[in-house]
Amino acid sequence: MGNVFGRKSRPSRVTEQDRAILQLKQQRDKLKHYQKRVTLQLEKERSLAKQLLKDGKKEKALVLLKKKRYQDQLLDKTENQISNLERMVQDIEFVQIEMKVIEGLKVGNDCLKSMHEAMSLEDVERIMDETQDAIEYQRQIDELLSGSLTQEDEDAVLSELEAITQGEDVELPEVPTEPLPEVPEPAETEPERRPARNKENREMLAA
Image 1 (cartoon, rainbow, N blue to C red):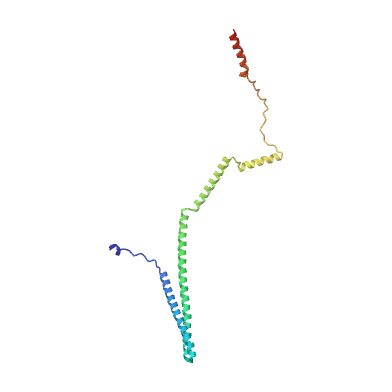
Image 2 (cartoon, helix red, strand yellow; image 1 turned 90 degrees about the vertical axis):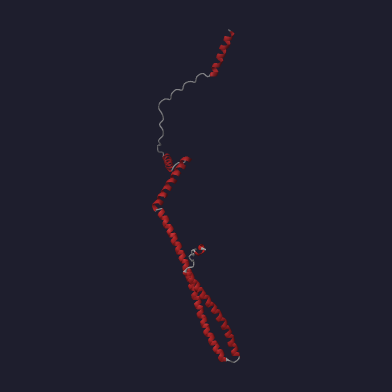
């Protein structure tokens, strides 16, 4: 029992704007109900005025039509009041939507500020520079592994080709002027000496 009575009531989610909208809608519904009731009454009075004219009671019909005219004016005023109430409800609901949008923008702005504080512009520039250096370093590694020529090598090859085309002297390695050393004659091969040894062995066996 103590837990039941000691339970804290949850805060109501109904705002003052919600209560105002509810009251405006209730008033609008009451006016519509009144408008419908008066419209039915006017139709009856119009039929009654026709019947009075048929019966020759012109004065009574005229009084009834004057009453009907006054009620028609009340209906017009009622219609204007209903339009005003509906417009006010729409304005309040739209303002509520705008407030939610503003709250969302505020939360997003605070989030962006915290993110900007966590990473400054200098940090972003440093990371971009490091990334560019890493990409350039990896490109150089790829060129070395693939054996491709660098742009500097390509420029050197084109310069050499242009020099040859124009007839300019191209630096070539010097030709040696000293005589080449003599090449010694090859020694007697093993197959040529093998028959002489076989002959000596046969002579020793015959003796």
